[in-house]
Image (cartoon, rainbow, N blue to C red; front, side, top):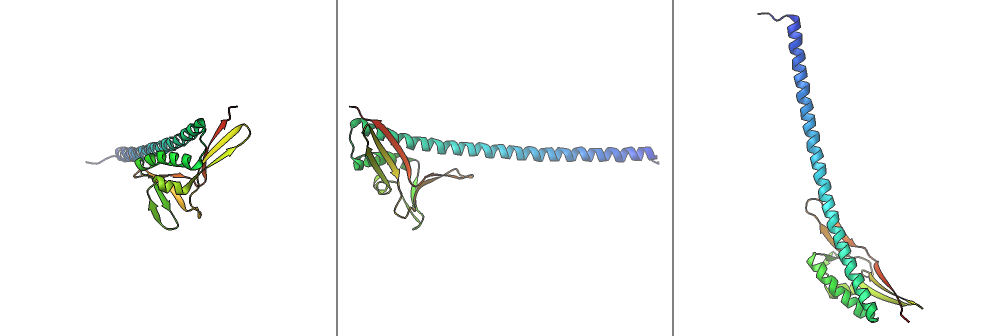
Length: 175
């Protein structure tokens, strides 16, 4: 049995078209897999960033509320204000597994109230009609102690309170 030239050409053309279709399906599958991986990665990043933002807001809120409370009481002892803030922050930091890391000495400490008292300060400025209370994460003299936490398992980001981070409360004096 002999194939004529038209039949052979049609068979080869059909075979080439089938190979091209299979190749296109493979490429489409690879693109689809990469797209799914990218969407999963973006979702994980979004969740991690959300956790970091919630933690930042929680810390800012605790500090600000404590500064406001002390202003309302008109109690302006910086050491007491610092102790009260750090006592409240200690609970959050320990619950959230934050650490005080000294990069120079390669030391890690828990953010207890006592340790926080060493790396923070409160300053109070009385002006004519305004009182400003600042809570500042000062670190140590060498500026090597960071308050930090790794967020995420497969994809990591770090939450870190920057050195010289400051939250201020400005209150008007009632005459």
